[in-house]
Image 1 (tube, helix red, strand yellow):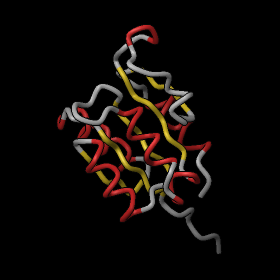
Image 2 (cartoon, one colour; image 1 turned 90 degrees about the vertical axis):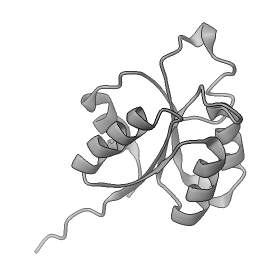
Image 3 (cartoon, one colour; image 1 turned 60 degrees about the vertical axis):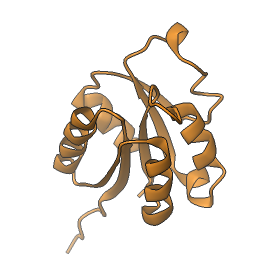
Length: 126
């Protein structure tokens, strides 16, 4: 008997509640356990609680943008292990920071396709 693969733990952080909730619903269809945060500080607190394997961060969040959130996540034990993906509608020249320098593994552009999400999920260790 083959056991099903464990669900990936994913944290979605976006100050746009509709975008965050829609992405979370899609990830749930891909057998992920999803937590949603609407700010960088909320994402850090949820990350500390749930230790996500994948974090998808909007870059243009107020108060603490996605790059600063990623830097703070990388300073935590669970954050050093997690895959962190930037999700933004901005072009590279419009970003407030370099997503790679902030420690992000992927740079995704809104709207992200299901195929791209599946590829990112496939790269995440179970």
